Length: 99
Image 1: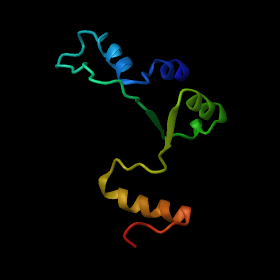
Image 2: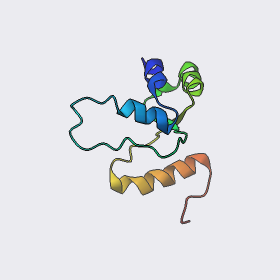
Image 3: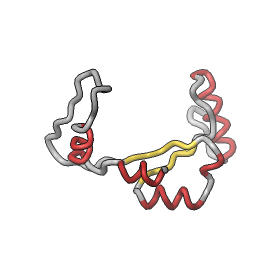
Image 4: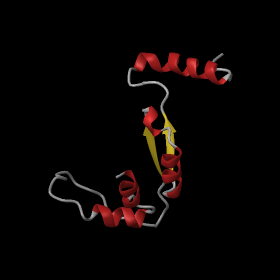
């Protein structure tokens, strides 16, 4: 399933524009689909579950040129982000910003 999804991702702005032109009536607002030059597009997926700690998933992402971002903390809560960053810096034995 993820392989199929990754395979649908456009790799440049012309491919993204062609994909956008196929939108359906669910897109009610205006959509800008015109491109002035063809530029590369890069993709990343953020994983938050240990089930993605699988060499086959990493190989799949690599094959599709998709970066994998690993989230160690839930920074959806604004007040936690600074403390999570300091905790991660400690785990990695690197100086935290602002110290």
